[in-house]
Length: 467
Image (cartoon, rainbow, N blue to C red; front, top):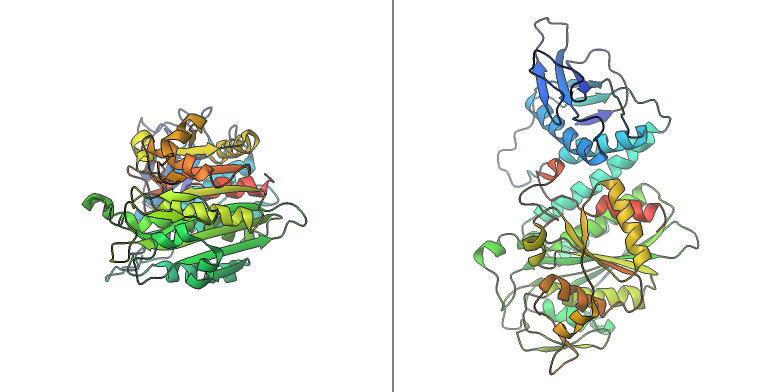
């Protein structure tokens, strides 16, 4: 679909927005949240009418608006019309810019499908043009451009997450990252296996040593903020995770192509910041590999020495993400000299057992950093729930024969305690997106056709406003 912030004189359908109890058509339309009521025109030159409910005027939020607009766009998919005009915008308690941004996000993120492997690629009969009238702010087209760039980056990430493991492996993920970097305007360097060995990233290398697809360390940089400090991003990049010798269940294996969601979202954030020419400095690292079974695969009982020098007893080869992240976190702090760091990873299935697909567990070792993140999350409408980093949990990952072990009870918390060992005092946030990167059941209407894009908008806004 094409979206325009202007009037259109001859639409085939006019959409009128109403709040609850504001409009009543013979008790068929009450303006309830997400309610849609279509009235066909019987006159050839008169447009059809679609009533669109926004719910309680006093309770509307940017997130409810975003979700309602997702429902609206799905209705557009059903209607075989070329030109649709959305009219009569009442901004209620939301600022006009906030209203516009949320509306566009809902429409643009819903306008997504992954049909690459469909042999019967039926195209819509008509390309739909959606015109949105009623916004009088001077920078409305700048907002459209900004949101379009963010939505495009998220949808590119969704494409990567949807790819099967036989077509998206470490080398291919790195190749796509380079293409996105070149197109978006940020720097990128891809380190190959020998370079990774020279860095001493043995925890990362051990995870990926049982496959023909070689690991890659993807290092990205966007420098447009003058002399301000660099913030760091780290994304988990397991393009295939069978669990290794601690093999996953049949059900679990079906979804393991999405174990690189953190990497995809980090790339999306970098792309969004660069395309929108944000005045920020940010570096990002993705350690990407496969965790599969082979005669050369690492095994339960192995001892690994990480890049930081800490020794790790492997008790579970399916606790692999924290091993790759340990080296990536140390690398971005020690070698790239970032002042703060956020990592996002599909790390523990227990995160979903606790919160389902609604809240993303968040951990932090720094109160100020955490508070700024949560303030931003409230603005973007994404849901996070803080989990403890109580030092008493550190004993859970003590090993009798090494500095630490890679798994323990209280799994979501102890996985974070493991990562905390590799950031020292650097302000750090860890996001366990195992159950929210792709949602079952779907929480957000605009993510029903693929991965959710969770964290991208919040981290983009956090960095852009100067964390």
